[in-house]
Length: 112
Length: 112
View 1 (tube, one colour):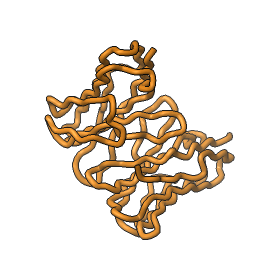
View 2: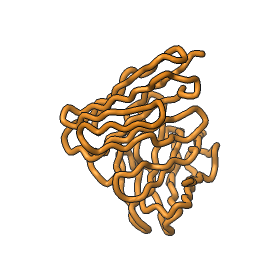
View 3: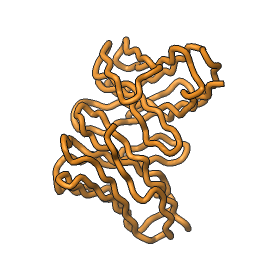
């Protein structure tokens, strides 16, 4: 079974802090994704990556950056956390082609 | 941002009843349609990925159909069980490259 592991289930940080959310997958998938889930809204794509050192902006990239130094790891970075970034963050991975995405358990991030 | 509509937003049915719900999406530049099931406190789980107009997929008591010309997909659950309670998400891949646009989901509750 594909395993997508997010480093924390719950995280509390302060406004202005630099925050790192880590995601690791064990199935050698090329594609990796970061989403956020907010009440009343669907999952929204923040950034995605097709390969090591490659990244593409999703629909809501403002205030975020990403890093993919190794194929199995995709990090989401909040450069200077703000309260409107309080949300559930989900990481996913997939092979190329019309294949399903495999999701991690999510990180519920609170910015105080 | 492209508009993906799921209806109804929530649904309560009795155990043993059959049910269905709808996903509507822009029909232009269509690549694929994904369905996911998201149970509380778990990660989203892939159900189907469909690409061709007229596609029908089945997994146990759950099935889905796809109409790419008019831009909709139906998900059917036959003989609902309490373990079918979840939020069902659809996500068309409209811009290619596995860039999904998620609907808000249909929250299904099965009453024993």
